[in-house]
Figure (tube, rainbow, N blue to C red):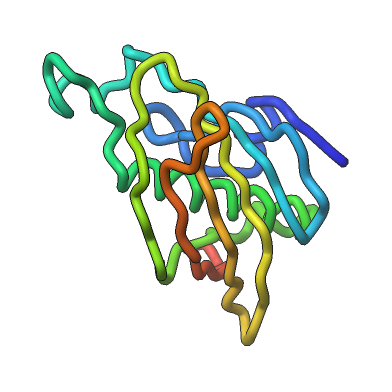
Length: 148
């Protein structure tokens, strides 16, 4: 079991405001599974236009938060070499949107490594609010060298 705060999240991920969508890792089994959280605030910039009067977090941003969680799991297993890599989303399968995410919600993201073949990692991903699944998908990701 391992957890880490926003400072460590920012050490691993290149994303920054307004696109960093993980606030904390609350549990991790190195190379196998990770649980992260995103506190959803009414101050998020996307709520201004999605949708005025009834703010809903865009489903594609929930998928992005899930993809960022896969990067955290992969980079934490890489150790020191992660700075020279970008962890890129290369595919999404079986995506299902089952609920909405609204301001004030705490989004809990659960990632499980399914398999790794020829540099492509596959993850089972779920995003939950109050114990109910709001988005689930299988994600394919790959570490690539950063441009010099």
